[in-house]
Image 1: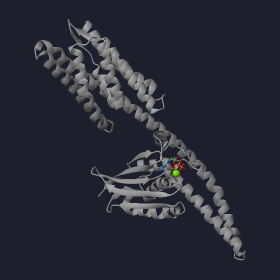
Image 2: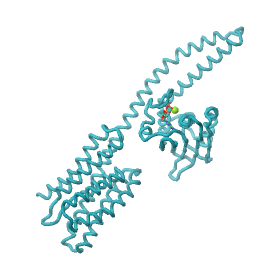
Image 3: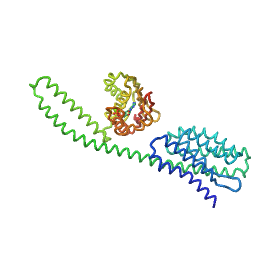
Image 4: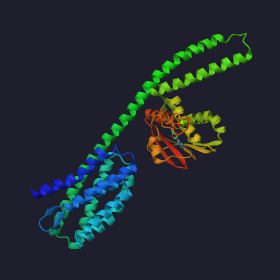
Length: 416
Ligand code: ADP
Ligand code: MG
């Protein structure tokens, strides 16, 4: 009975950090670095608890699941949390005495940690089921290495290897369960965040459409009266003023139209378009803007790349990104636009500048409504661009380094 109790205790030591982290930390601690530190500490406490209260079999056999906090801490945290947790295991293990078990711990860690760190990179970019598989395989291999070394040190006898074999099976199964649990919780979180974001956008969309209507009516009235004023016997100068006023009103109306259309992403207006042709058009439109800023645009565009999208919206989103790239280089510079197709069926558009760049935090804020660091910025450009790309089932990634430049990578599903 006491063995079962011990087993359940070990499981509780894993559950506590998971629930503490996802209930109290993820949403309250804004800084990603701090979150990582807290997560590492929680896993560290879990390791100490696991090692302090092992499952004891008879005389000398101890079974504990410290491998699981180590693996999760490293996979979700990265290199340094991995090193910290490994060091913690070794240091704490010393307090139990330096014996064969200690050497075994050190050797297994030395062999396993590089393996875990190696897989951590692909883990971070993998899909859910792949993550679970990676965690389970790592847990299995850690225990297998441990078992092998124990066999080498003590001899491969049934007496010595029964417990490690139980440990291997138990650790692997528990890793699988907890990896599934963590992934499920993360998914719920992600969905909640996305819902919050889209709710924000929906509210803004609704507000703007109301405003737009209210502004349009007086504008139409003004336009009508201006046209009435425009009589043939008016002096040339006044005629010109009226013409300019009319043009400006039309421009304002166009902006409102554009903005209204962003609110509701429609499906019907999409068509098969050549991405190269669109990019060339966008570059032509933006060229007048770049001349004043001493910016040169270089393009390298592959032909015959087709996507299914609305050309006006696509142009709008590209122009927003390009304008930001140009504005990020107040003293001029170079903007590169490349377009290629990827092996997994996407068109990849890269827009790269040599501008002021952004910090990690600024990148995270990108696309939030009204987020702008510019004096006369609206903070709507990126929000609109992200929304448009998403409505085409595309993805957008931003890499940036402060003082060096920014790279926008847009992936859009390719059609033939
Ligand atoms: P706005 O351009 O009106 O400020 P955006 O939504 O277009 O609004 O951009 C939001 C903010 O993101 C900008 O104020 C700027 O600080 C930052 N940003 C966007 N693109 C870049 C870039 N290529 N380089 C540096 N900063 C950028
Ligand atoms: Mg902008």
